[in-house]
Amino acid sequence: MMTLCHELGLRGHGVSFATFRGRGLGDHVRALGYPVQEFPVRLKVDPFAIVRMARWFRQERFDIVHCHLSTSATNGSLAAKLARVPSVSTVHGLSGKLSFVASDHLIAVSGEVRRHLVAQGLSETRMSVVHNGIPVGPMPTPEVRAAARAALGLKPGVPTFGTTARLTPLKGIDQALHAARRVVDDIPSAVFVVFGDGSSRAEYEDLAASLRLQDNVLFAGYRPDVRDLLPALDVFVFPTLKEAMGIALVEAMAAGVPVVANDVGGVPEVVREGTGYLVAPGEAVSMADRTAELLRQPELRAETGRQAYGLVVDEFSSPRMAAKTEGVYHQMLATRRAH
Image 1 (tube, rainbow, N blue to C red):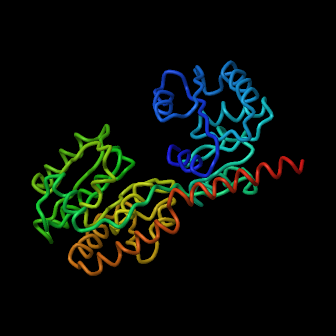
Image 2 (cartoon, rainbow, N blue to C red; image 1 turned 120 degrees about the vertical axis):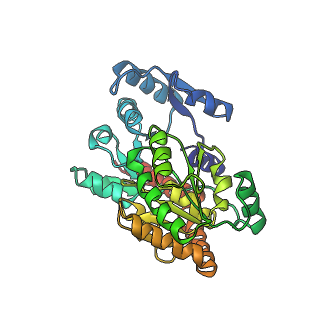
Image 3 (cartoon, rainbow, N blue to C red; image 1 turned 45 degrees about the vertical axis):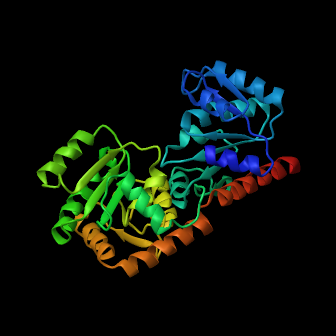
């Protein structure tokens, strides 16, 4: 959301924020220089907040109200209807339809999200697919990769693979750890780096110990600078069991890192031929074999990483996301004028 708003500003649009009072987002965006109005939203559908938002929408004469996530979409789109302002909601996950029925248009972050909503009875004609995008810098140089490894305390030349995830059961870290055991059996010096934290961290640390991986697994914890550290990896693994799109995949690919990912949800829309491999969810052997293949073949790894980087530049950059979102806005406004 913040990446999109920054890009829209660069394209000449004015962006203001309606945020939930007491949640912290208001202070964050205010510090970045955006106009902010905070509302006390206490319920999934809060009539008082809806009326107050509608009054503000009318007062500021906004052209579009753009909502993100379910509670914001419910309250924001109802307020937009009351204010007679067109609304669009971005659906970031495989969500239920009820939070989004009042929105005039929906942006799905993947074709899989769109299919999920259509299966629930929502009309495909009021949906667009706009993949999440990220700022893309230059392809990391060997010096950048070396610095990222040093920041993690990794020795030069050590085969390294890793993942970024919330450490919860849905993210499939147990599959990745079992795969890591097989990789280490094949390449004893290999190191598996886990970026992220969560309720299951202690469980996964215990699993790593039971698999005798203490010397080959680095639990790096939550790192706000994870994008700067991803170039340390030779291979990125993505063992999630459910995924709308996979922004972590895009971040890894933007670092020129080839990926081995579970074939679930919107992941195949990101991991395409030549950028990495798809494996069956829960299948540790296939994940390990593909990872070891890339670790053992530097030329294959380098070419796959280059193609992954090129795909992000072409399809998942933040300017592309903003341009496609802007197209949705223009389409909505043209339809409104026609009516």
